[in-house]
Length: 444
Image 1 (cartoon, rainbow, N blue to C red):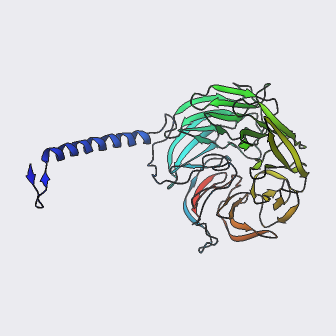
Image 2 (image 1 turned 60 degrees about the vertical axis):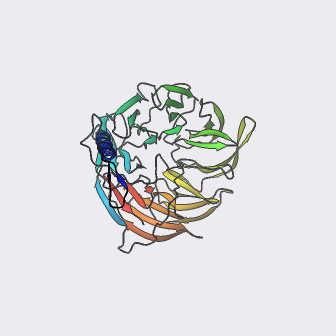
Image 3 (image 1 turned 120 degrees about the horizontal axis):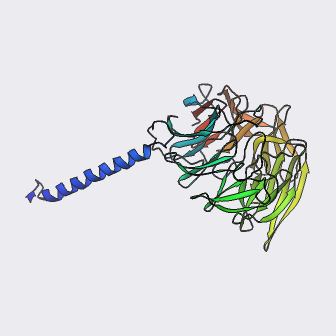
């Protein structure tokens, strides 16, 4: 043992031991990092994944499945005439929305008779892993656009995705390796949808729940997240392209699904029917996701095909939930895009085959506050007291709701093909796709 110039003791044996420990730990850490970068058995070569922590968008509709996200710093003007493009790259066909978690993006696309579940680096757009599988689309009418249509779901360490032919995969989100799979149509006898499977999975506790239908008593099915074992199946209503949501009524969790002729709520622990209310369209088709607000117990729903919009109030007394209609009219009909509620107004792009009107309707009484022809049919999200709107022609708009219409702050063309996929926001980073391209923009 020696002394340093300041008089403190210097222990060589201790330092040598400490250095050995640090070197060993570094080797283990490098090995673990290398293993995490290894792709699945069917994936491309691995790419470096950004370690940047970003706010998550883990499912259809964002963190709370209502197309609203907490964000700050979204600019209301673009000095260069358009937002800063961080990256852009080709991606196959499909309408699946983009998920964000811990510096990675996840979505689905198709190429020929193959579908691909893909993970990308959020900072660069480079492929981290891919999981391709055969998806023969014979027998489907894809004239309105090829699938996949469903948006994946991240729950824990797994990602769940359903393809256009009803093939459901659970993959390790880190490397794309298969954990389990089911075929909702051929294996489980699910309801055949001629334009392809559309609903997006939802998580509840240790299960993942999807609409299946077809055979009696399986409108909804819940699978164990880890093993894929069927936990329950229940209800006889016919499924549609709409995606289920989880709400809480009077202290009870409920899963809500917009069926072919009705909207209904079920117990997510066993699928038991709790309530239902009719909402029938000329085509037997409900697509847009219902909007729930726990502050007043009002559920807003809207459809094309001649029916329009409706609001019901859900109340719970004892073990019974009652659905009471507040109003219904056909002044607003949201086809397949989404709706967002802010205050007492629900906003959405009202259209079917004709002109689109970005519309504000009062959820309390069904009165239309205004309709604005400033944009084509569009999907959108709400953040930082603003709407971030992507219209089907590929235009991006930042706007706020005004007294008589949209107050447009900035607008620019950003995509070239049909854009039916709702945008995804993480912080000020916006992720978009059309039928061929995926890109990242900075709105800050």
